[in-house]
Amino acid sequence: AQSVTQPDIHITVSEGASLELRCNYSYGATPYLFWYVQSPGQGLQLLLKYFSGDTLVQGIKGFEAEFKRSQSSFNLRKPSVHWSDAAEYFCAVAPSGTYKYIFGTGTRLKVLA
Amino acid sequence: KAGVTQTPRYLIKTRGQQVTLSCSPISGHRSVSWYQQTPGQGLQFLFEYFSETQRNKGNFPGRFSGRQFSNSRSEMNVSTLELGDSALYLCASSSTLADTEAFFGQGTRLTVV
Image (cartoon, rainbow over all chains, first blue to last red; front, top):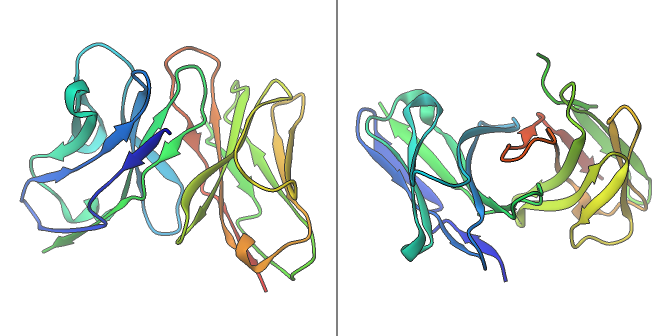
C-alpha cells in the first residue's frame, strides 16, 4: 500500500540552527513528491516539489529537499532556521497525473529564540 | 492572481444536519480536489474532480459527496452529520498542465455539535 512516514511528530530547534525533517514513502513507482507547510488555522503552502530530474530540489524560503530513491526518502533541509519557520510540515506523494495526494502525519516545528 | 477561495471559513452544525461547502479554484484551473484534516486521522483525500467529472475518490462513506460545475467551482456535501465529521476541509485546485502541484485554500472549519 502507498504510504508516507514522517517519523518525527515534534522537532524543536534554536533560531539559526540547521534543520532536517525526515520523510519516507512507500510507492510502487517513482511518485511525485511534495513538501507543504501549514501555519495554525491556515491552508497548505507548497515549499517544493520533485517530479523528475535533479534529485536536489530548491524551494521557497530557503528550503531544499533531496530525493533518494535507494532509501525511499525525500528529506527537507534548511541551513539556518528563522523564528517564522515555526509551523507544521507535511510530506506528500501522488501518482503522476493525479492530485490524489497521500500525506504524512506531519512534523510540528518549534523554533526557540 | 486570486488564490483558491473556500466559503464559508467557519461553520457550526448540529448532528444529523447536512452541510454544503464551496470552493472556487484559481482562474484557469480545471481540477479540484478535497481533503479532510483532523487531529486523529491527519489529511485524507476525499475526491478529485476534473471538468465536472469525478476522477478519483477516497475511502469515505457515501454521506460525503461532491460535484463540479462548468465554471470549475466545486461543492462538497456531507449529509447526516456526525460528531466525527468535525474537521478542517481543504480544497485544492490544479491546472491541467503536466508536472504541476495543487494549490490549497485556507479551508472551512466545520464543527458538529
